[in-house]
Image 1 (cartoon, rainbow, N blue to C red):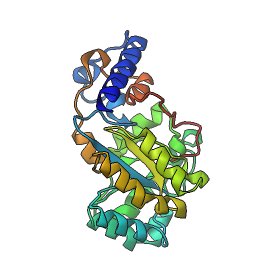
Image 2: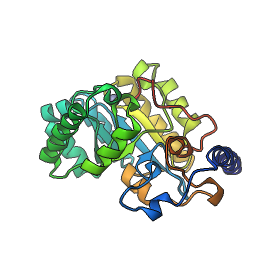
Image 3: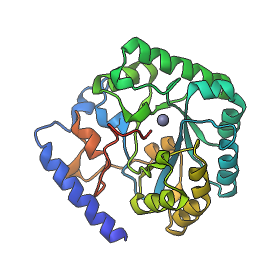
Image 4: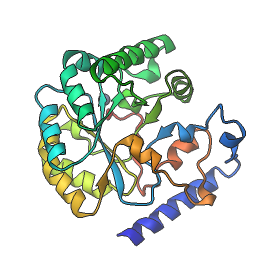
Length: 271
Ligand SMILES: [Zn+2]
């Protein structure tokens, strides 16, 4: 499998490199105050090793998140939760537990609106209220943000990074668990798509997703994957092959995902 993945990655990288050949790979180094988009936005991370990040959105759920935390603890897995501010305000103790047990907490807005269609002031308020709620619950401010539905403009990414310091975290593996296809389908989709450096999207508000996790974790472990938080995964990032340097602009979003069949996060109800 690893040889296959290697060639798939190289082929994908070559293709993307050719598409964006006129861009300047050294833009970030020349102007460190304005990092290129590829260092702000991540669909996946290029790593040397079998590391992946499981992410769970839209909670906390009073019913399901504690169950998931028990499962994660039993498997010694660290995950990342992209929480809704409203839910944090309702159940700060669950978020506090997640943080205490080593999981990462990211900002997923206050009430799950579509950032791509909102005013800056509206987005700012959604993020600030949630940032405050997470700080109140965990004594720490988040450093990651995932826009609801993966919907965000390039301009919003830049000012949100500048104002809040947030990295914008999308995903490369989407089991469409929000459609509640049943635990077996959620598991098989995750197993099929996950590769080293993957960021796996799921939601800890659907019973079938939680039901799918024990066997999903076991199968991923059996394949040799190691689970880390999103920030840990980003810290492990290694350069992509030189001919495939991430490029500024919208092409960076695509080049961040060397998948054979990247799932575009936009226009999907995921996230
Ligand atoms: Zn969401």
